[in-house]
Length: 141
Image 1 (cartoon, one colour):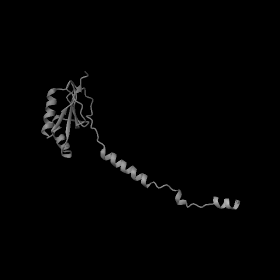
Image 2: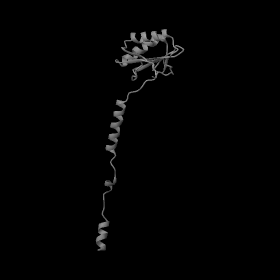
Image 3: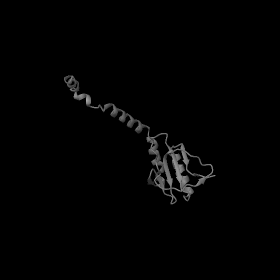
Image 4: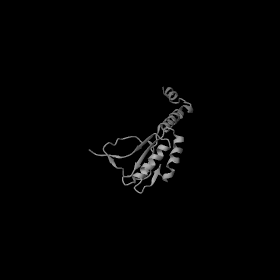
């Protein structure tokens, strides 16, 4: 009987059966990575801190695409870059060439000159952008 037990214990298993095949797991990881890269939408920031004016009719919207900020010192910032007022139209036209359905969100500081806001708004519309919005804070009721 001991000889029978010894025969049972000495079973040879091929060494290749002990390896774990990682290929299916890597395939799934790469597919998930591609999915997240394709489905991610990036939020563009204006690049400066703006104190927006309050409005009772303000509505919450998703980012329109390009953020244009006008500071209290009447500086114009487009996508975190200081831009001259005369360069707003060419900059927006270049961005619109890359993305035809481009929208623009203008954030003007409460202390900003209204003339600068109108100039920027006019330049954005002359660049051919149809979706333009001016950001404000909603009043707490």
